[in-house]
Image (cartoon, rainbow, N blue to C red; front, side, top):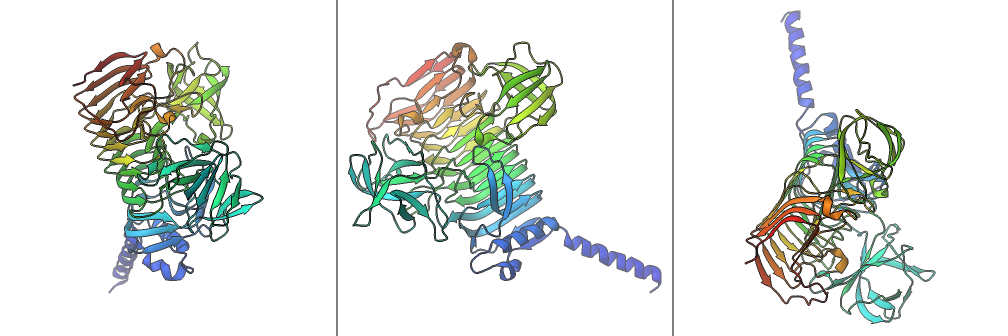
Length: 573
């Protein structure tokens, strides 16, 4: 063989070796023995993900099994997560800058310990995570069975899962490693129906604890004015934070979450921001069947802020979480100063929306009045100077409208097309679907058993500062089974408008073009629909079945209430 042939052969071998080092699969099994410490598999998974990123692997293979994860060796970053608590967070799976990549769980079970989240999916393209169940060894909330009730006190018996201590006359919770689990609110759950007790309200606490004393029979007596509950029910003691969402998605496109079960998280289940083309298929957020645990996760099941492209939730379950099944919206900033005809200072007021950088160069934004939510200008952003996580200096390609004033609102005009199909949801605190996308939204073939409004059109410029205002919604072929049995502040009807404009409601028309057809309403609460400031709603070909599943104790008996609306067509059989 001559020298030229040797060189060609060597070059071919190097090329083949290089090809083999790119793409392909990374198997977690290859890292478990070296990088696991006792039952802690965190570093093994971290090293496997790092190798997958390095070689641009197509797949991370996880052999079927049960794996435990602790925060000490987890990936860490400071994260602003919409409508959750910002902070320095730790994640087991750091999926950052991944492309055309799949995490294949093969039916594995992930058990998380302490203050650590499962997934961050950041700046990714075409990523799929699938086929696993996740839970926590110790939940971020606590649950106690009600054994006795008196005036201003309740006796609770806590299962061994909820370690507690009484110090200086107050109740505190911890885990086996000494982590503290503060709580800020209480909610009574019906132990037979496994749902919020009929008309039970939240009890909010100011100090992340409650006065308490240990009783001789092993129960704990807690004290609060007007506190009451039914013997045999369960009292939920919820965390005062949203620190640990299960799956957080940011600045990504083409994210698929398939065949994933989330038993618990210390925040939201799936939360996404500034992302597009997201699909949840058979994502189950619910307690394990047969488990004594009443609550699944401690906030919304899903939440999407300033997302685009498509958003699909198909054949999912959202049960027993401590907030809504989903919330789809944008965020409003407040104009604080007009520096020049084309330059302003903007402030984002809500602390769970800091740091998301809503306003971006080259994007079109809308400007609107705070109290009426009436849009008066759409304009292109030329420059954004981020002063800090709350304040921004913004310049536009042209002068803003003359009517612009300090106190007005501004937001990016990004919305997803939404399909929620074949999903089941209920037994949770608060409401079902909070819809705020201005592109077409379809809700079909779903089942609702929600203590508040099953479908809620919200958006406001004075508390959460959430941009909404739908333009094309189809609600069809769903079953609404005895909704609105919970606290009266969770909704004024099965399908309702909430928050919204406070002034000029007759002119605002904040929500538009809603079609409600071919649904089944099973009602013990007569209130089917309550709308205001809506332009265009048709209610037709729906079946209404009266039920005695719950008593009705409120004053409003009208099935349909519309105020300051136009183009409303209600057809009943």
